[in-house]
Image 1 (cartoon, rainbow, N blue to C red):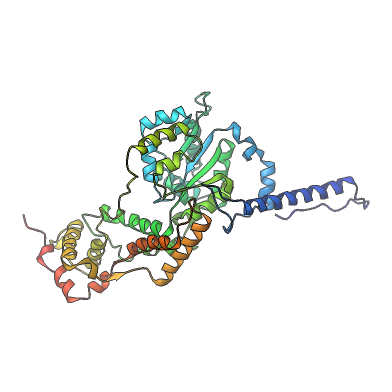
Image 2 (image 1 turned 90 degrees about the vertical axis):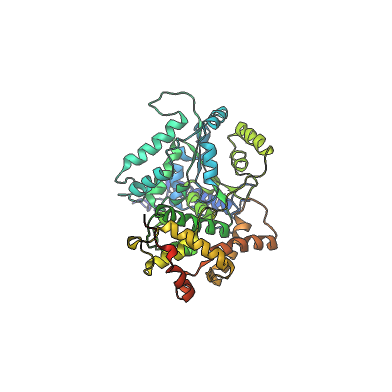
Length: 448
């Protein structure tokens, strides 16, 4: 915003009012520079953002003036409002584990001793998906969308969870936790920023996000995006062999893709919510901690009783075990099956087996043939270098834990990069051996 300074009055006088306006302008600009410098130079704490090299959100003069004109959103008034902890993911950073803990009635009773309420379970990824698709990504202007009732209902649920809804006449005010990974896909548009920033009218908002090293995050997300196709279409075939999400590195950065379809990683999530609420209101926790529940409830500052409860449970058992993302998925088998189907093999209408049955048969083939000698397609060297450099940068600038030594970090990196390798189905279908196997009677549906 260009600051407009009135000209001197018609008599040519530049009296006290002119000097006062000039002094005011100098004060505003000086305050702005001081605020920006403090933001850029601030140190990260044990669970905070390290902004030394981050593309920090630059506070514009307009935003500075807006903040002064709207003091209700400032931190000086936050102590009179209920706290709202928005756990925003991103996807594949332990959200399911935390939501399972948050959505247990027995845990609700313990959390209530901390004066903390959990937003109802129906405010989940489907709920937020409808809010995004029907309102936030379809604004009419900077203040309204076509389905404003969806936004109004969302705010109402948050307020009722805190016990400060006018319709309930409740006097007890709770702090509120809401966990939904779809928050990381909120579109970056003026309407979305304005609406989410307006939550500060009712709440002292803190955004919680988890840091996961990019190689593990990308490979886990890649597998996650395969699941719906494999499970939903187990009884039939759907063409998905030319998958756009094979190259997730480009997908997360491609500016031609609508912002709400991009899978933001931790850095993208920090940058977006830093722009909405300010980076001091974004807290980064560690996916790589020994126990996710401990990391969350003992770090957010509002659940000391529940932290003690989780600590007792954690002390009596081994470290949290995370399931291998590939345990229940035959992704390589399914890739070959769908390529073969698209090339004219074993159409179910011609009396052949279903898709999930074809996957199981191909699994037996792979086990006998030897998986280690199957032709593979992996990330190219450019993508690997990009991921490694991003890992080093994020570990140094964002990670809430001490950086691993470079050798250990590289070993961890290489382990996850290997998961990007898939069978090279097109090459396999050009060999006589696999053509013969896929034409065998194994794939013929038995007659009743």
